[in-house]
Picture 1 (cartoon, helix red, strand yellow):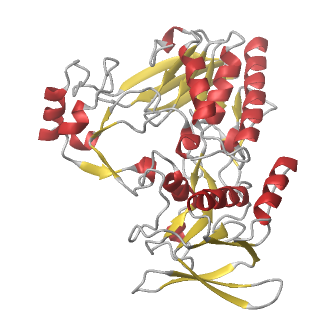
Picture 2: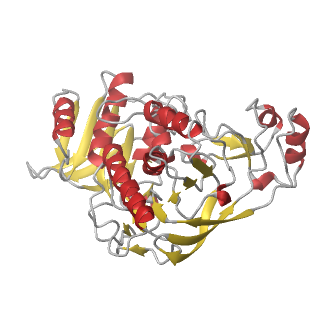
Picture 3: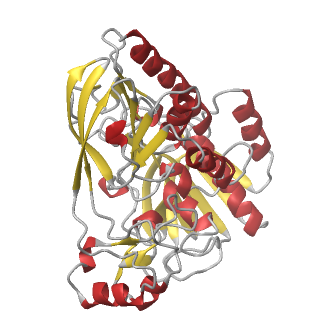
Length: 426
């Protein structure tokens, strides 16, 4: 199915999926492949969500291309799927089995004639922060979101519309793929059920005043994923940001803002495993590096994750220190980082100086500071609450609670079944 096929033509027996991350993709395909029309809406210019930003899944440590590539192929081959990128739901009215939905689609300024030749990017002079890499690099005003973007199509940033850069992009394109006159579109749909798979974002580490995120060599766990990824800002070379120095010592600070009433009162489920996984990234590149993991509790849910944890624990260069980090300091001359904590086992105060520190910031639902249309309910932390009694709208994935990829897929399948039941019974 091509992008932006006329989804207005589907019947009220269709299903709307909001969010094109791994949960949204799974829910979409599970419903479509048993014969239901599905409209998928994603606010980014590409599908894949947070998973697309990872270097590896755990515990198998395979790249995200493994799952995403297959799902993208399934979407392209399925006539039951329509999808919109750069789109958001504006309004919802009606009830289970008969919803009226309005979607706003922002202009991409690049149409389906795009061949990804990259000529527009070459002539574009403006450089903008690259959000995909958490601003650790820049991108041009004409850009491909990332090397595996789906749809594989360039985007013209609205920040260069009306500039000479935009004109140069038009002149450079041989395929008439750039349309600077594109306008926002309003799409009206009738659907029988809605699945909210709106995903998550990392907690803002700048709000944690004692962990040193203002220092260049203190990064977050998602920034670490991008450093390790071959399509990241350093092409997969894990070096410290201030001077590109190789890593000899690194610290992982667990529960950075999590399990803290001043920030996130809950555990984000995946942070311990993510840090242990990232320890393998460091080990691959720097076999002699010392890795320090400061933790409150190591949470490895399930047999597979416990096995992975035990494997990392046996590494003689990985030091697990039970103790909540009280402070992170910087040496202004060397830019080295000192992590200060009290060892909860020995009672000793620990001062560990490292090249770089990684803050394991927690998951915040994208709905935490956004009021969704249609009367969707949230809990006090911003996670969505599925109203199973009335039916019709269902939350899944990390919009519902903190989850790993495997659990997200399982819950998304369940949400697809609930949506199908709603459509069948309406």
